[in-house]
Length: 146
Length: 146
DNA sequence: ATCAATTAAATCGTTTGCGATATAAATTTT
DNA sequence: AAAATTTATATCGCAAACGATTTAATTGAT
Image (tube, rainbow over all chains, first blue to last red; front, side, top):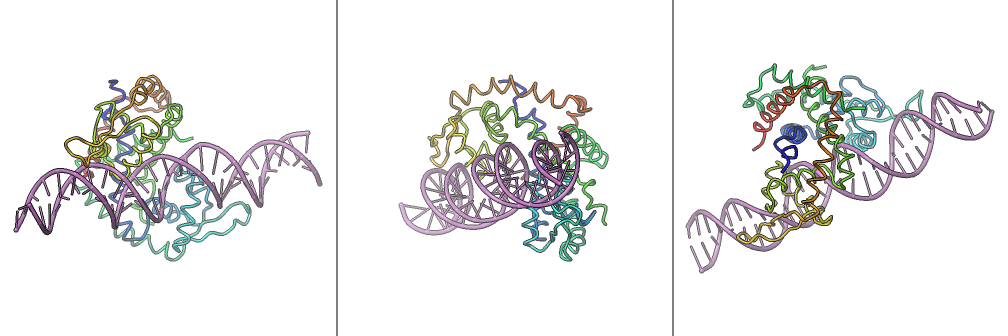
């Protein structure tokens, strides 16, 4: 048995597990808001800057448009966002928040950060551990993204 | 705009992105072997210890059986593993490697670790950074898994 | 200006991941 | 032992991800 192929030695498996578990920790709050985690990501992008084309949202989330387009279509059906053809470039679809989508920011702010703090209260990591983690993850992300 | 809701301040988004990007980095090698990343995880579990029930594999990968069962069914169809009912407990399905599944370990060992090393060569992280990262991820995983 | 190449979205098909539920076998309770 | 509960898998439905392809609009080249 090659040690390199042991699950315990895999950073990738840890990232995969930690990512899924944190997403699962968000789920109860997101379900209360009626959204999923990827939809929450799209909303965060739009809360920072409204009226963006699909491509910019996809780029920000490091996703392909073939993932973002259906995601956005579902969000439109739910009344969170609207789409309209771009003025300068008619290939673009400009995505904008509805009043419902805008209003959800405040609800998310009240609900999610305190709940996540509670959920991670038992975690021994300190603030500088999280900052360190963020830096290490950014290194990996920047190395691997095209 | 609440700072807590900015994408840049989200550990979760970093984990999600890093996980997807590393999985994508594995993909060319896994495609050459004819498998996917979750299938590779199942194989690693079985390379460490063959003949395990679905439940143990799911537990090891921190997945539910409703994810692992169809995954294993596809792997069976591809001839990588076999399933047989448990002797003591007839509810169990014992999963075992076929010769093809066993032989794949050596091919994976030749192919994957060197390619991933190359892929991460440009990453500024050092060995102790990775060890640190592993410890931090384990903290999060242990805090959040039931 | 015309034709070719690029770009922005969308569509299609497959594999995951997971909540909810079903089924059958084993265990516990009464 | 019969009934109730728990446990191991499996099934179903839906939302991601993503490779591959398509369509329409824009840009670049001749």
